[in-house]
Image 1 (cartoon, one colour):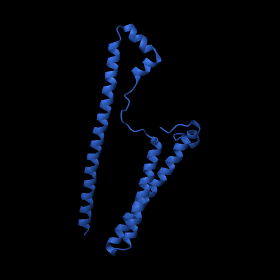
Image 2 (cartoon, one colour; image 1 turned 30 degrees about the vertical axis):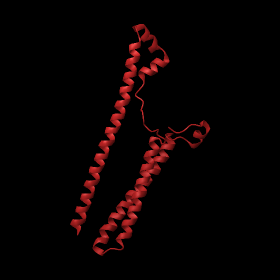
Image 3 (cartoon, helix red, strand yellow; image 1 turned 45 degrees about the horizontal axis):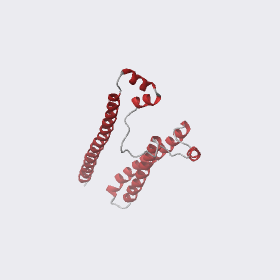
Image 4 (spheres, helix red, strand yellow; image 1 turned 120 degrees about the horizontal axis):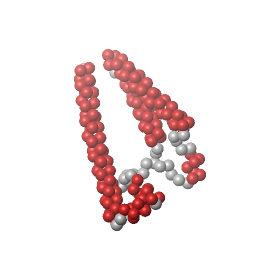
Length: 170
């Protein structure tokens, strides 16, 4: 019975790994194509702009203006990228909190199940449930500590600053 259980777990882990790798490759390809299009558009605009200048003096005069300097030093802009509404520290904190809650709920399921199966299966399920609960609590504590540190270091925008400026969080 244990061999079948571990074979099933191994098959599931391999399946999840393969699906994750395929999704990562697709995401990387999509991001690369988006970056390539943006870079190509910016290169064409720069080329057309350079073609319009008839002499080096015209180019130097343009570069010395603030708008010309900003345009020539600009990085490629994303064409269809959705705006980020949650900052990087906050999104990582929320991910950690979400993982902790999911692991804690899964551990409660394992602990509940361990009381309702035969005794030779009960002890390993209970041990796995306790370990998963510890991981879940660790993720939640980590999210809380990260939130407090981020707020103390000024990485998170205070709620009042957004209301007074009338802007949105980028």
